[in-house]
Image (tube, rainbow, N blue to C red; front, side):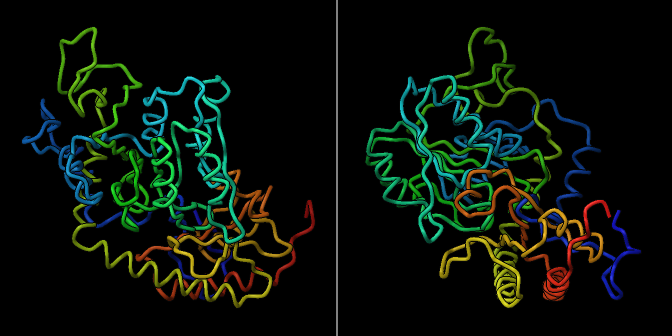
Length: 398
């Protein structure tokens, strides 16, 4: 509960949500109704997992294939989220034997932890490329790393700390020319900017449903190029093929669909994807406009530093700031308790990029905007941050 008694006079009684880097809110219109309907409708014996049956899982694949601009819905494996998808990709590739994997310091822990595990087990040699002076992935260092012979390159499409969109198409093209497979973490971009695997030279794309797609938590997926064969990392009953006691079903996506999914969540993702096709572009455009308004206002506030604020860089609507003399978590707590503004503070599960940005060990205050915000909310947020920058921190123990 928000502490309304401590808020300034005139503060809205409703929550102002600018934490889209963590998860979206509100969800797309129709999502809650679709989830409720799925939970209150008797389940079917065959849940539409095969082409032609058009259950929510297959309908999700078809709409995701259109969004990704790929011709093969069966090459999209539906998962519980991006972390699940990344693990399928990283552990299912299985072609390491001490070979080199290249990634960047901008990655989320859902990439770094599996890679560090593979490194510690001596299955891979891991190279982590830093940033250049503009905040982009260092091209020269990357070229040197992949030129040494690599099996796999894993990159995030956009930083979940600064919002910076990286030029992954050029980097992946270089990686492919060196014989490496490419894996894109599109958790922050799918539903916000075009994510087309062929154009980006991505052999695999991992994504989540609860962020820019505005669907429920517990949904996500992995696209795998038809040229690439992965081994399933889970062995369980397939929903569309039984009786193969000793073998995993060979056809896709059956070999990767193990156990029973949360059908209500994927019904909600279906509703979100339908909304995306109808109205998503208008929401994205408004979110970009509001983020520009917020960034311009922040630049005018003395004591505020926008982290990774390179000029003319493509970004998703995420802005990270530091306030001189203030602890990031204290600022986050004050913004919510006093002004009803919810945002994030800390390292945002991307620990390595903060060394390059000079924001360790505290991290940043992260503001994530969407088209569901309003100009009045942006103005209120700027006023609140302006107020916070003038306050001295309370003494320890006070």
